[in-house]
Image 1: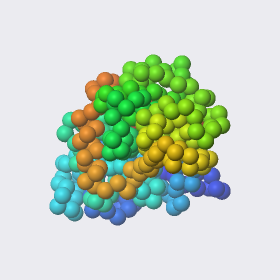
Image 2 (image 1 turned 90 degrees about the horizontal axis):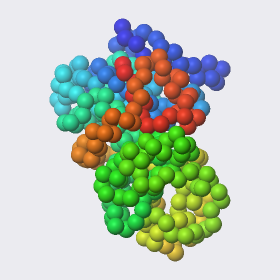
Image 3 (image 1 turned 180 degrees about the vertical axis):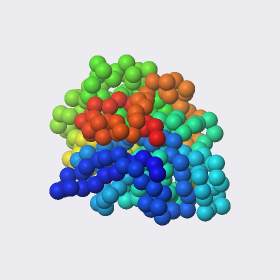
Length: 326
Protein backbone atom coordinates (compact mmCIF):
# COMPACT_ATOMS: atom_id res chain seq x y z
CA UNK A 1 0.00 0.00 0.00
CA UNK A 2 1.16 3.55 -0.68
CA UNK A 3 -0.15 7.10 -0.44
CA UNK A 4 -1.74 9.01 -3.30
CA UNK A 5 -3.63 12.26 -3.71
CA UNK A 6 -6.95 11.18 -5.21
CA UNK A 7 -9.37 13.57 -6.92
CA UNK A 8 -13.05 12.70 -7.02
CA UNK A 9 -16.04 14.69 -8.18
CA UNK A 10 -19.11 15.15 -6.00
CA UNK A 11 -22.02 17.30 -7.15
CA UNK A 12 -19.75 18.95 -9.78
CA UNK A 13 -17.18 19.85 -7.09
CA UNK A 14 -13.67 18.40 -7.12
CA UNK A 15 -12.69 16.80 -3.80
CA UNK A 16 -9.01 16.07 -3.07
CA UNK A 17 -7.99 13.56 -0.38
CA UNK A 18 -4.96 11.47 0.59
CA UNK A 19 -5.78 7.77 0.25
CA UNK A 20 -3.90 4.51 0.58
CA UNK A 21 -3.98 2.47 -2.63
CA UNK A 22 -2.15 -0.57 -3.97
CA UNK A 23 -0.32 -1.32 -7.21
CA UNK A 24 -3.27 -3.24 -8.65
CA UNK A 25 -5.22 0.02 -8.81
CA UNK A 26 -2.62 1.75 -10.99
CA UNK A 27 -3.45 2.10 -14.70
CA UNK A 28 -1.73 0.10 -17.44
CA UNK A 29 1.82 0.87 -18.50
CA UNK A 30 5.23 -0.64 -19.28
CA UNK A 31 7.20 0.84 -16.40
CA UNK A 32 6.49 0.89 -12.65
CA UNK A 33 8.16 3.82 -10.89
CA UNK A 34 8.81 4.72 -7.28
CA UNK A 35 8.14 8.45 -7.31
CA UNK A 36 10.68 10.58 -5.44
CA UNK A 37 9.24 14.00 -6.28
CA UNK A 38 6.40 15.56 -8.20
CA UNK A 39 5.77 19.27 -8.65
CA UNK A 40 2.91 21.73 -8.67
CA UNK A 41 2.19 23.53 -11.94
CA UNK A 42 -0.58 25.98 -12.76
CA UNK A 43 -2.41 23.20 -14.61
CA UNK A 44 -2.17 20.98 -11.49
CA UNK A 45 -3.64 23.85 -9.49
CA UNK A 46 -6.61 24.07 -11.85
CA UNK A 47 -7.10 20.29 -11.69
CA UNK A 48 -6.92 19.94 -7.89
CA UNK A 49 -9.17 22.93 -7.15
CA UNK A 50 -11.56 22.14 -9.99
CA UNK A 51 -11.23 25.71 -11.28
CA UNK A 52 -10.38 24.40 -14.74
CA UNK A 53 -11.87 21.51 -16.71
CA UNK A 54 -8.54 19.68 -16.76
CA UNK A 55 -9.83 16.28 -15.63
CA UNK A 56 -12.84 14.58 -17.17
CA UNK A 57 -12.54 11.07 -15.71
CA UNK A 58 -12.56 10.42 -11.97
CA UNK A 59 -11.01 9.20 -9.74
CA UNK A 60 -7.69 10.72 -10.85
CA UNK A 61 -4.22 11.15 -9.36
CA UNK A 62 -3.02 14.62 -10.41
CA UNK A 63 0.57 15.62 -11.11
CA UNK A 64 1.74 16.30 -14.66
CA UNK A 65 5.40 15.88 -13.58
CA UNK A 66 7.34 13.23 -11.72
CA UNK A 67 10.88 12.02 -11.18
CA UNK A 68 11.80 8.72 -9.63
CA UNK A 69 13.34 5.26 -9.84
CA UNK A 70 12.28 2.34 -12.03
CA UNK A 71 11.01 -0.59 -9.92
CA UNK A 72 9.98 -2.83 -12.81
CA UNK A 73 10.09 -2.44 -16.61
CA UNK A 74 8.59 -4.40 -19.50
CA UNK A 75 10.51 -2.18 -21.95
CA UNK A 76 14.17 -2.82 -22.85
CA UNK A 77 15.02 0.89 -22.72
CA UNK A 78 14.62 0.98 -18.92
CA UNK A 79 16.00 -1.29 -16.22
CA UNK A 80 15.26 -1.60 -12.50
CA UNK A 81 17.14 1.17 -10.69
CA UNK A 82 17.17 3.63 -13.62
CA UNK A 83 16.33 7.24 -12.77
CA UNK A 84 13.66 8.78 -15.00
CA UNK A 85 11.70 11.97 -15.55
CA UNK A 86 8.22 12.48 -16.93
CA UNK A 87 6.49 15.66 -18.06
CA UNK A 88 3.33 15.96 -20.14
CA UNK A 89 1.66 13.33 -22.35
CA UNK A 90 -1.66 13.89 -20.54
CA UNK A 91 -0.37 12.28 -17.34
CA UNK A 92 -2.17 13.79 -14.33
CA UNK A 93 -5.06 14.66 -16.65
CA UNK A 94 -6.29 11.42 -18.22
CA UNK A 95 -3.70 8.96 -16.84
CA UNK A 96 -2.83 8.77 -13.13
CA UNK A 97 0.04 11.13 -12.41
CA UNK A 98 2.89 12.04 -10.12
CA UNK A 99 1.18 12.87 -6.82
CA UNK A 100 1.44 9.30 -5.56
CA UNK A 101 4.33 7.28 -4.19
CA UNK A 102 4.15 4.97 -7.20
CA UNK A 103 3.17 5.38 -10.84
CA UNK A 104 2.80 3.05 -13.81
CA UNK A 105 3.51 4.71 -17.16
CA UNK A 106 4.29 4.07 -20.81
CA UNK A 107 8.02 3.88 -21.54
CA UNK A 108 7.53 6.23 -24.53
CA UNK A 109 6.59 9.02 -22.13
CA UNK A 110 9.80 8.82 -20.09
CA UNK A 111 13.24 10.31 -20.54
CA UNK A 112 16.35 9.29 -18.59
CA UNK A 113 17.20 11.65 -15.74
CA UNK A 114 19.95 13.87 -17.23
CA UNK A 115 23.42 13.69 -15.68
CA UNK A 116 23.88 16.61 -13.32
CA UNK A 117 20.33 16.47 -11.91
CA UNK A 118 18.79 14.50 -9.06
CA UNK A 119 15.04 13.89 -8.74
CA UNK A 120 14.41 17.00 -6.66
CA UNK A 121 16.33 19.29 -9.01
CA UNK A 122 14.53 17.74 -11.98
CA UNK A 123 11.20 18.67 -10.39
CA UNK A 124 12.48 22.16 -9.57
CA UNK A 125 12.74 22.38 -13.35
CA UNK A 126 9.68 20.25 -14.20
CA UNK A 127 7.15 21.05 -16.91
CA UNK A 128 7.55 24.75 -16.14
CA UNK A 129 11.31 24.80 -16.72
CA UNK A 130 11.06 22.40 -19.64
CA UNK A 131 8.46 24.68 -21.27
CA UNK A 132 10.64 27.72 -20.56
CA UNK A 133 13.54 26.02 -22.34
CA UNK A 134 11.33 25.31 -25.36
CA UNK A 135 10.27 28.98 -25.40
CA UNK A 136 13.88 30.18 -25.24
CA UNK A 137 14.80 27.72 -27.98
CA UNK A 138 11.98 29.16 -30.11
CA UNK A 139 13.54 32.64 -29.79
CA UNK A 140 16.97 31.22 -30.66
CA UNK A 141 15.47 29.44 -33.68
CA UNK A 142 13.88 32.76 -34.72
CA UNK A 143 17.34 34.32 -34.80
CA UNK A 144 16.83 36.71 -31.87
CA UNK A 145 20.29 37.58 -30.56
CA UNK A 146 21.31 39.37 -27.31
CA UNK A 147 22.58 42.38 -29.28
CA UNK A 148 19.16 42.82 -30.93
CA UNK A 149 17.70 44.38 -27.78
CA UNK A 150 15.69 43.66 -24.66
CA UNK A 151 13.69 40.45 -24.25
CA UNK A 152 10.47 40.54 -22.23
CA UNK A 153 9.14 37.78 -19.96
CA UNK A 154 5.53 38.05 -18.76
CA UNK A 155 4.29 36.21 -15.67
CA UNK A 156 7.95 36.27 -14.67
CA UNK A 157 7.47 35.20 -11.05
CA UNK A 158 5.67 31.99 -12.01
CA UNK A 159 7.30 28.65 -12.75
CA UNK A 160 7.78 29.10 -16.52
CA UNK A 161 8.61 32.79 -16.23
CA UNK A 162 11.23 32.46 -13.50
CA UNK A 163 13.12 29.78 -15.43
CA UNK A 164 12.82 31.75 -18.70
CA UNK A 165 14.35 34.81 -16.98
CA UNK A 166 17.22 32.65 -15.69
CA UNK A 167 17.91 30.95 -19.03
CA UNK A 168 17.81 34.17 -21.05
CA UNK A 169 20.11 35.93 -18.60
CA UNK A 170 22.55 33.00 -18.76
CA UNK A 171 22.57 33.31 -22.55
CA UNK A 172 23.49 36.99 -22.30
CA UNK A 173 20.14 38.63 -23.04
CA UNK A 174 18.99 41.78 -21.29
CA UNK A 175 15.75 40.64 -19.65
CA UNK A 176 12.75 42.73 -18.59
CA UNK A 177 10.48 40.82 -16.19
CA UNK A 178 6.76 41.55 -15.79
CA UNK A 179 5.12 40.67 -12.46
CA UNK A 180 1.96 41.63 -10.60
CA UNK A 181 3.84 41.82 -7.29
CA UNK A 182 6.86 44.04 -7.92
CA UNK A 183 7.86 44.65 -4.28
CA UNK A 184 7.55 40.99 -3.31
CA UNK A 185 9.05 39.38 -6.43
CA UNK A 186 11.40 42.05 -7.78
CA UNK A 187 14.45 41.09 -5.67
CA UNK A 188 14.18 37.39 -6.60
CA UNK A 189 13.77 38.18 -10.31
CA UNK A 190 16.82 40.43 -10.18
CA UNK A 191 18.78 37.59 -8.55
CA UNK A 192 17.68 35.30 -11.37
CA UNK A 193 19.06 37.80 -13.89
CA UNK A 194 16.34 40.31 -14.77
CA UNK A 195 17.80 43.73 -15.60
CA UNK A 196 14.53 45.53 -14.85
CA UNK A 197 11.15 44.77 -13.30
CA UNK A 198 7.87 46.03 -14.77
CA UNK A 199 4.48 46.13 -13.05
CA UNK A 200 1.90 43.99 -14.83
CA UNK A 201 -0.57 46.90 -14.66
CA UNK A 202 1.31 48.50 -17.55
CA UNK A 203 0.36 45.56 -19.76
CA UNK A 204 -3.29 45.37 -18.77
CA UNK A 205 -4.28 48.72 -20.29
CA UNK A 206 -5.91 48.50 -23.73
CA UNK A 207 -3.31 48.31 -26.50
CA UNK A 208 -3.29 50.33 -29.69
CA UNK A 209 -2.76 48.23 -32.85
CA UNK A 210 0.87 49.40 -32.92
CA UNK A 211 2.82 51.03 -30.10
CA UNK A 212 6.42 52.12 -29.67
CA UNK A 213 8.87 49.35 -30.60
CA UNK A 214 10.48 48.10 -27.37
CA UNK A 215 11.17 44.34 -27.42
CA UNK A 216 13.41 42.22 -29.64
CA UNK A 217 11.78 39.06 -28.33
CA UNK A 218 9.34 37.91 -25.68
CA UNK A 219 8.23 34.86 -23.72
CA UNK A 220 4.55 35.17 -22.82
CA UNK A 221 2.88 32.97 -20.19
CA UNK A 222 -0.25 35.09 -19.73
CA UNK A 223 -2.15 35.48 -23.02
CA UNK A 224 -5.16 37.75 -23.53
CA UNK A 225 -4.67 41.53 -23.08
CA UNK A 226 -1.07 41.14 -21.92
CA UNK A 227 -0.04 39.29 -25.07
CA UNK A 228 -1.93 41.83 -27.17
CA UNK A 229 0.11 44.63 -25.59
CA UNK A 230 3.37 42.71 -26.06
CA UNK A 231 2.67 42.14 -29.77
CA UNK A 232 1.93 45.85 -30.28
CA UNK A 233 5.33 46.75 -28.77
CA UNK A 234 7.52 44.26 -30.65
CA UNK A 235 10.48 45.45 -32.69
CA UNK A 236 10.51 44.97 -36.43
CA UNK A 237 11.31 41.28 -37.12
CA UNK A 238 10.75 40.41 -33.43
CA UNK A 239 9.42 37.10 -32.17
CA UNK A 240 7.13 36.05 -29.31
CA UNK A 241 7.05 32.54 -27.84
CA UNK A 242 3.61 32.05 -26.27
CA UNK A 243 2.99 29.13 -23.92
CA UNK A 244 0.39 30.15 -21.33
CA UNK A 245 -3.07 31.51 -20.70
CA UNK A 246 -3.05 32.52 -17.03
CA UNK A 247 -4.73 35.78 -18.06
CA UNK A 248 -7.22 34.19 -20.46
CA UNK A 249 -7.25 32.28 -23.74
CA UNK A 250 -8.62 35.13 -25.84
CA UNK A 251 -6.34 37.32 -27.97
CA UNK A 252 -7.92 40.69 -28.87
CA UNK A 253 -5.18 41.73 -31.31
CA UNK A 254 -4.93 42.92 -34.93
CA UNK A 255 -2.85 41.77 -37.90
CA UNK A 256 -0.87 45.03 -37.78
CA UNK A 257 2.21 43.80 -35.84
CA UNK A 258 2.48 40.77 -38.12
CA UNK A 259 2.14 42.46 -41.51
CA UNK A 260 3.73 45.86 -40.79
CA UNK A 261 6.55 44.80 -38.44
CA UNK A 262 7.13 41.22 -39.56
CA UNK A 263 6.47 40.00 -36.02
CA UNK A 264 6.29 36.24 -35.45
CA UNK A 265 4.07 34.58 -32.85
CA UNK A 266 5.30 31.06 -32.06
CA UNK A 267 3.10 28.80 -30.00
CA UNK A 268 4.98 26.46 -27.65
CA UNK A 269 3.57 23.14 -26.46
CA UNK A 270 5.41 20.88 -24.04
CA UNK A 271 2.80 18.13 -23.60
CA UNK A 272 3.24 16.26 -26.89
CA UNK A 273 6.82 17.36 -27.56
CA UNK A 274 8.75 14.58 -29.41
CA UNK A 275 11.30 12.54 -27.44
CA UNK A 276 14.41 13.75 -29.30
CA UNK A 277 13.46 17.38 -28.69
CA UNK A 278 12.74 16.57 -25.03
CA UNK A 279 16.14 15.03 -24.43
CA UNK A 280 17.90 17.97 -26.14
CA UNK A 281 15.93 20.48 -24.03
CA UNK A 282 16.76 18.66 -20.78
CA UNK A 283 20.45 18.56 -21.67
CA UNK A 284 20.40 22.28 -22.47
CA UNK A 285 18.71 22.99 -19.13
CA UNK A 286 21.48 21.15 -17.26
CA UNK A 287 24.04 23.17 -19.21
CA UNK A 288 22.44 26.58 -18.67
CA UNK A 289 20.83 26.59 -15.22
CA UNK A 290 23.28 27.85 -12.59
CA UNK A 291 23.50 26.24 -9.15
CA UNK A 292 22.12 29.50 -7.73
CA UNK A 293 18.77 28.80 -9.45
CA UNK A 294 18.30 25.70 -7.30
CA UNK A 295 19.17 27.64 -4.14
CA UNK A 296 16.44 30.25 -4.35
CA UNK A 297 13.48 29.41 -6.54
CA UNK A 298 11.79 26.50 -4.80
CA UNK A 299 9.38 25.57 -2.00
CA UNK A 300 9.32 21.90 -0.91
CA UNK A 301 6.03 20.59 0.52
CA UNK A 302 4.50 17.30 1.64
CA UNK A 303 1.74 15.60 -0.36
CA UNK A 304 -0.89 16.64 2.20
CA UNK A 305 -0.06 20.31 1.53
CA UNK A 306 -0.66 20.06 -2.22
CA UNK A 307 -4.35 21.18 -2.11
CA UNK A 308 -3.46 24.37 -0.19
CA UNK A 309 -0.68 25.24 -2.62
CA UNK A 310 -2.98 24.39 -5.54
CA UNK A 311 -5.36 27.08 -4.29
CA UNK A 312 -2.47 29.53 -3.89
CA UNK A 313 -1.03 28.95 -7.37
CA UNK A 314 -4.39 29.57 -9.05
CA UNK A 315 -4.68 32.83 -7.09
CA UNK A 316 -1.25 34.02 -8.26
CA UNK A 317 0.24 33.69 -4.78
CA UNK A 318 3.14 31.34 -5.55
CA UNK A 319 6.62 32.52 -6.49
CA UNK A 320 9.01 30.13 -8.23
CA UNK A 321 8.58 26.37 -8.13
CA UNK A 322 6.74 24.12 -5.67
CA UNK A 323 8.06 20.54 -5.44
CA UNK A 324 6.18 17.74 -3.68
CA UNK A 325 8.23 15.16 -1.79
CA UNK A 326 6.67 11.72 -2.04
